[in-house]
Length: 112
Length: 112
Image (cartoon, rainbow over all chains, first blue to last red; front, side, top):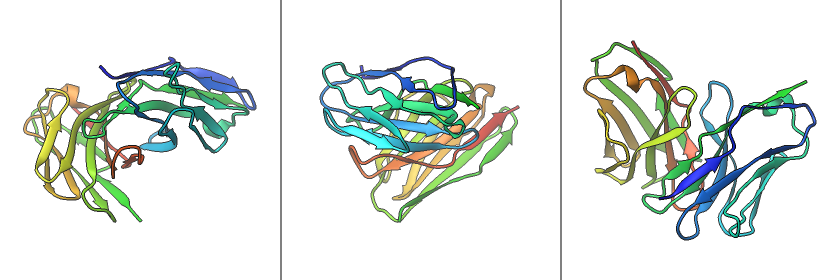
């Protein structure tokens, strides 16, 4: 069935370091792909999305490219900040009610 | 603009007591609605989704149930809570495929 595999954390980086969080998926057809962020004690916020192959989603310095050939949607940021510390979830939408199928989340801690 | 409201924010309930969590969406019609649960240290698990009034699909067998009495209202219930029902419950909505999902602020439920 459809699934999302996300690199396990926690990931600890120094401020201004480069970030990559890997995400791969299995799905039939052409799903939409998302990255969500959850700050401590809060709900989920949409960070970026891509709806077709080769699309690049971007927001707040984060980027991810929809790679259908490798079924991947890796999240990247060139220079992380302390305020980026959060849990990041990769998600895929499949067609049954358009529900999101989430990865297990990757906790990111950025230290000064 | 569309907004999603979820309440209560926190809840402490004894084992065996009933549960009712409510979620409402404003500023849209006929949204797809979802209930997710996030257990401590784990990812998000889809519990229920609804594509219309009175239409509920369950993803995971459990002692929880959901109802959609009105177009923009989604209720999560239980007749008798278990300790394992503790977690962070998130309501979400989307207008359709690829449009992005908006989450409520969540309800942190602790069953004691």
